[in-house]
Length: 334
Image (cartoon, rainbow, N blue to C red):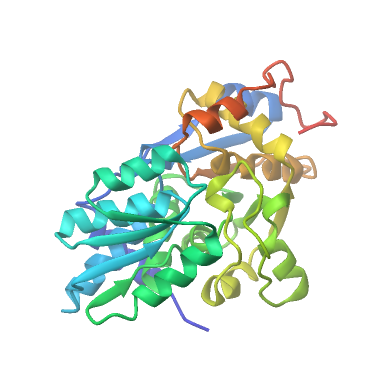
């Protein structure tokens, strides 16, 4: 198992502080009142490129340059936010980048990637994207920054929880969404070091449940096709061999229905007054399920992973009004 420590996360924090934002922690008085628990949100929607991914991309490139391994070209594969993150990071360090993306990628994320100066290549599906990126990475002078399965990417993503736990104390549980597992892996490492009494819990769409299947089988499961979920940040075909070892250490893991994801996307956008992308809303259904079993008042932290939403996705999110259904721990829905 690849060992990533809190010292790696601290080093990442020092490397990237000039290139990323220290994002705010938000608190919803109304939601906390309705649930009877204190609920905090690490708002990575205010991060550079609008998502936590800039942390891992910037750290990996800064680490390479720090170790005199500056690449001539960076390549990567992504369904959106990581593409923007790599494009942003390479623009900061003056390194060219080529990003392979599936044709189904959010138009907002694709355009943002181009705006940072990266070359974008679209492929029919995620499997082809991953294969083409791997082939391109074999060229001399080229370095592949993967979306999640890399020690320095994971260390960079862990700085979000690291910041949070240095600001908030007595947190009982931390929740984060799972795509490839990089954010959850980094969050687990930070949490075990800074707040060992806190539990850490992951969640992913039921329609994209490769991680849940992998955890049940105790071996990595790969989906046969790009999953049909509104949460585009969780459309990965499988977790990585590095992230899987950390996911196995989580305290719990939930599979979330599409209606629940949309429900919480609407409600978090409304309550927090920020743009929340569907992937960010996945953990809230897990928060409700977990809190409904608790006998005493809890303090929980939810990592809002990003806020990049294109018009087509926005139309899907708001095609049905869920705001008439007030969140409650005792309700039978959501």
